[in-house]
Length: 359
Image (cartoon, helix red, strand yellow):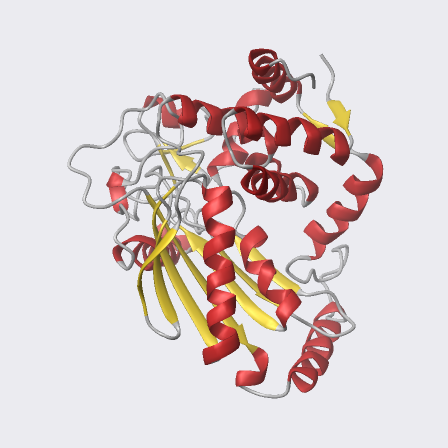
């Protein structure tokens, strides 16, 4: 079976109908669809529509509430803690990010931590909301424990991504969206579907030895922090992942470390969980709380252009500005369609048959 190519409109209609079918109100279904397909458009296939069936299974397991009452449980003029009521992270996160933006409009900066949520898609989908308001956006989330800290064989952290979105003037925005592991688990899942080996430095086996077996996690292995091993800086990746975990969960009252709920619905929930659900953290910083926005964006343009002009190693491509590859992929896929792996197409058709929704 070959890879399928689908238009954005086809996938939007299908995804929207699936979210409606599990009981999401129309506004939430639209939001969840937008956030999910934002990943496919930007080329982050591991976090896009390929995860749709996973959200449905979480709903089946009564771990996702399709009609959450998202509420603020503590706040100051510039900060808040939000309870997501076990809603889809695809819905809870944009609401929390909007709250951070609203607070920044009044206080200069806004900071919101979230408890009782679920997987929220790609971090960039939320951080980039701030760009339209001449603000810097920050988005991070913890995730289920698949990552071993440096020197450990235990899985204690998630892939715990961070995104920072910074507006520019004539140049496209700077958008750095990265996992704090050498590779996100979703990329490992893609290799599993393709039956391909993983690059060395992505994972270790149950004994802590480097391996290229993309299925090593199923045998007790672990993902590696950014850097891969101590000699290449894994202690820095471990520290970054820990910071995300603390900001997202210890600060909000969500679960942290090895107690974060797993994404696969069939994986048992950890025992003695200290918090509620998955945690996120969002920030919005008004540029003009620091200096005139026009002056800042003019300097950002110069910054970006100077880095684009950087001398490169012979035979290497030009220096890439964070966000460039995803922005370019978005243009291509809106025009030419979104490719889906055969296994993903089969999975989506199975979901569609259940709800009588054709793909």
